[in-house]
Length: 450
Image (tube, rainbow, N blue to C red; front, side, top):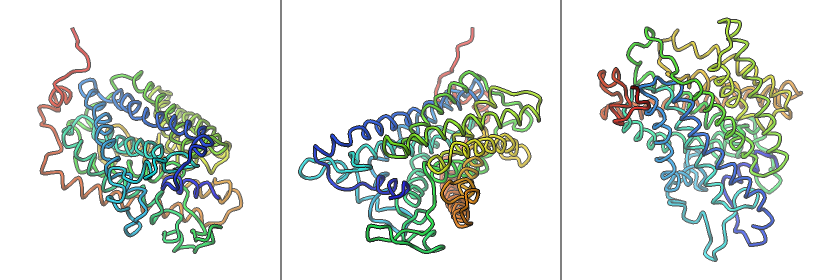
């Protein structure tokens, strides 16, 4: 069975587990519990990363947006998120029946008290926890485009609505057997036909590859951030005032925590403590390091300096790019992927000034651009189907198609949600924005200055 097939079956669950099964798969269970904890750590890491990039008077609000997403989505995922993402009753290949596993019914234990199987034979409830953390970090990423000007209450409501109407459906489409997966009813199967899966069923002859979230996480969050930045509007003084990071050590600490947590994100998406996880781990390290070099080289040539902000941002760009490709590239291919990601993102973060949208903390320039590159680059660099390794054009076409469909779906749905929430009010008052959103929204300040 191909790794992608293992991932899909892992996410959807399976048979009940006997005590002997649990013992035999305890190593994988332990690894996946650790991977889940690592991915959860990414969201506090993101809070430091975004908080440090913000100005002093808005750092608490920026960090609270990440923590708020954790609070909202961890509850929602248990209630209907798992069911909508990985339920067996698919509705048009877009989302699954939210009531099938509502509140995780029939997802933890059977009537005899046996744990229901998930990935690689370990309990399904571990997969629920793992996937919860993905939904949290994806939503939290969007907040970076809205720094210093958005009401906290509106952001919390947006998080709940967006994860329900955008993230869960896209996760189902890509990983739950929907339209962007490799199932027999997917777009890939319609384009290039189906083949026997060896178990009496059919799968797409050319399966889309998204190992850990190029489409579901990074393209999704990146294009949502762009849409919200346009709908909500610019910060006061954008283009005239220098919005400098208030705490670069926070930024580098956040990047370090993100990098550490990302090993759970990518290596955990092998769903076993095996060679696939090892390959993802090495590729993640290599691509990230190469992206730092690419970003710093670009800064040095363009600006004459290599900066700490550039190093931290380059690391994130590399992590983003390798996410969909971690199981499909060689370590050498990951170097090329990372260098290009660093260069592209370093150039892309300046586009907001040219086109006039206020992507405050460069979510579009890093996550959308590097996510697109990482998803599409599999068609060139994938060791089994990439053009550079003797593959034909079909994998590249499929990768482009899933990226474009994800872009369009998320852009349209996010715009609808953003405009629907406008009557509640997106922005704080001008006075609050000038004085500082920490004080107006949370009645707190990060630093007491004598």
